[in-house]
Image 1 (cartoon, rainbow, N blue to C red):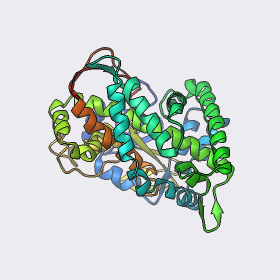
Image 2: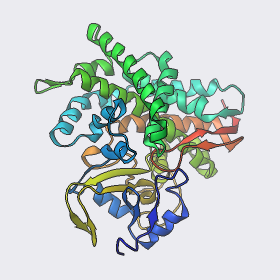
Image 3: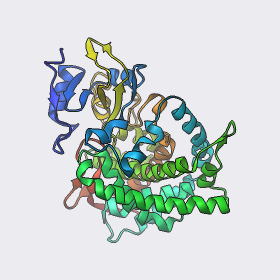
Image 4: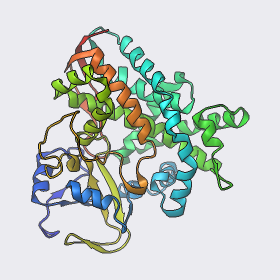
Length: 397
């Protein structure tokens, strides 16, 4: 397949869907497609190889630039993400931040996550009915990140509101949403500044204090790095869990037998999370950029080319999962919903843990769930997830 004959996608169009038949057809045509940003990689093997290709770097740093955003507070914050750093800068930030993501710290929070999930289900306004996003996914995600960071859970509405607004930056409508994104970013910075000052005055046994005191080889995070990292942690921890829980529920609605099985076998929670993220990841593509000209499987890739690695298309590639089923008991190849290589998501253990706690409890308490109203969702490109998901179900204590 030459680049001239490869299928073309306008992935900036809000109507474009990574799950569309055109993407499925293109995947059978060949391993990649052309897009208005660069190329899209569609198959499992090639996505896995290119995630760690030595001539590709993290590519999302140019996402704002693709939309004409080259300056201002959002552009500055985006460029300072640990995710968008390379080389020594990236290694240094990860080394300093890693202790705050220890397995011991996160595992110790599991009982609190369990209590929170039960509390939210108990509080549904109507027995046997809920608006899943606003009554469960949003408060759960926001309160989990508050619990993890050591913030007051009463701040969850602010965390949810501002983080959801910043999350619009992950979608293809970023340019038109920029004013409200930057306003939300400013509000979160103000909140984070107060928290950092408090921990400097009065250290505690919590995540924020660990981050404030983070030190390795006599090196510490600067105040600017602390601020940027804290805003990223609040936003990223909320946005991923909120969206992924909504996508998990939508997926299980199409597979009621698997939902019933999860309710009966809560130990399948971790595998349920992995299977959902294989077929319906909130991060629909992972981005790389070519550092220099190179040739891969007959395709000449020029320096500076953006390479979108389509995570859902890879996860559902019949070459990787021939049976094509959704099965929370099956052994599957690793999904790419958390990226890969040196840029593998720093908070993956948090997301895996809080969702593997929530989903089995929901499956036990909400039997036979079904859509009960209008479902609205973000575009099926960039970062995606339901905006509203009204459900009816058979309640069980």
